[in-house]
Amino acid sequence: MSSTSASEHYLPYSFGLFCLVLSLVCSTVQSEELQILTKLKSALQKSNTRVFNSWESSVSVCKFAGITCNSEGSVTEIELSNQNLAGTLPLDALCQLRSLEKLSLGFNLLHGPVTKDLNNCVKLQYLDLGNNVFNGGVPDISSLTELRYLHLNNSGFSGTFPWKSLQNMKGLIRLSLGDNPLSPSPLPSEVVQLTKLDWLYLSNCNIQGTFPAGIGNLRELINLELADNNMTGEIPEEIGNLVNLWQLELYNNSFTGKLPVGLRNLTKLENFDASMNYLEGGLSELRFSTNLVSLQLFENKLTGQVPPEFGEFKKLVNLSLYTNGLTGPLPQKLGSFAKFNFIDVSENLLTGPIPPDMCKQGAMKMLLMLDNKFTGEIPANYANCPTLTRFRVSKNSLSGTVPTGIWGLPKVNIIDIASNNFRGPVTSDIKNAKSLWQLFLGNNSLSGEIPADISGATSLQSIQLNNNQFSGELPSSLGSLSSTLKALDLSHNQLSGEIPKSFSSLRLTQLDLSYNKLTGPVPESLSKGSFTGNPGLCSVRKGSVLPPCPPK
Image 1 (cartoon, rainbow, N blue to C red):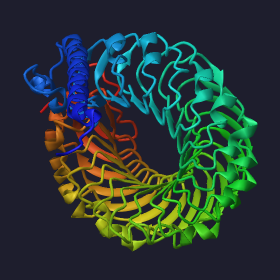
Image 2 (cartoon, rainbow, N blue to C red):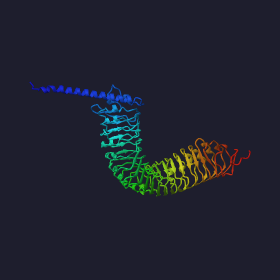
Image 3 (cartoon, helix red, strand yellow):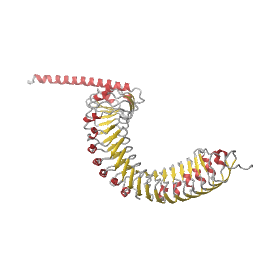
Image 4 (cartoon, rainbow, N blue to C red):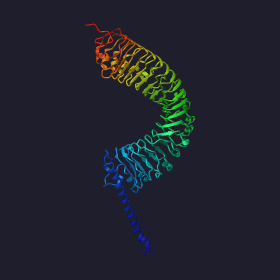
């Protein structure tokens, strides 16, 4: 006969009772969470979305679309971003979800205020309310001490942001508050104490004043964006401590001084944009940024030469340095390694030839080098660059003939070679330029006849061939451009013959045929144009400045 103790008889009973209680607790929690999520669905019932189709009381909340639960069956995540949701958030209910760690509602149409109940979501690690249309300010969130990711950008928040709430978020990794009309504020010290940050987006949210002294503490940053603000002073040398930076966006502020010495330490930097500031000095600190993909420093006061090292940058695809005081030549290997996309160095004092191989990889879209002192000819390689949409080299000292293929580039919108020393003809290849809107060739020494095939460029809106040596008759085919052509300037050439009757169908807002050798009657529909300097022209319209045409 066994000697089983009395306590052993009670073990199954105790365990069973425990399971029963646990089951009741779990059932109660799930019932509460079902009520909370039902309230969320009700608050957003006007949304044009199907995401709530699975939110039925007959199934577990853990099977609801966008809901994740833990092993105990409690809701830990709500992921409903980009679901076309509309309505106001019932945060008083949502923040009763005791295990909620992630609330992701970005890229929706949520409106109304974000209430102080948000401060009750104390277990949140991830909060994304960005890209919505809320109004009012961001409430105190100092209780959210476990936050790692905070995205509130572009959501209509105004007023003073509760910067002191960040003091307790020592583990914050990403902070995105940009594109909100917040009250003006300096970059606060609370931000530069968040030493685990790898992403800081504060563009276009009324940050003003200078960089705080502790900016160099944020050594984990890979992205720092402070563009479109009212920041002043110099970019500090401490920026060089941020050796992991991949992107640095400082454009459209009022920064002054030179590019800091510390920039040479940012060898991982791929995107740097400090355009539209008051920066001065040279570009030498960027000689070591060999991983640059995009460099934009336009509209500053920069001087000196473009470093020769730029020609060896293997990843560079975008270079925008226009409206500065840069001098000297461009590196001739510039853009020859990667799939170079665009260059804009207009409005500088640059000299020497155009680098020949920027379309070597067949991806270049824009070549913008107007208003400099470039010399030499257009490199022949650009005639074989079918991706080009804009080719603008006006106001330089370029010479020679234009490579034939340039005229017929299939995607080009603008060909602008005005105010140079080019000679030779416009070839019939121009019929292939089906995307060409604007043809600016004025103030050169171009010659020959205007090709009849120019009418094949069926998208043309503006043709300016003034101050050249074009001769022969006006091509009647130009009249076929009557649905698109708005401006035609052929003044100061050697054109002869009569104005074609087909020109009567043109609906021009600007017409200048002055100072040529044209003869015969001016079509009445063109009478508002300029025809001075053509003694052989006459008018069939009374009151014209031209002499009347003789009776037939």
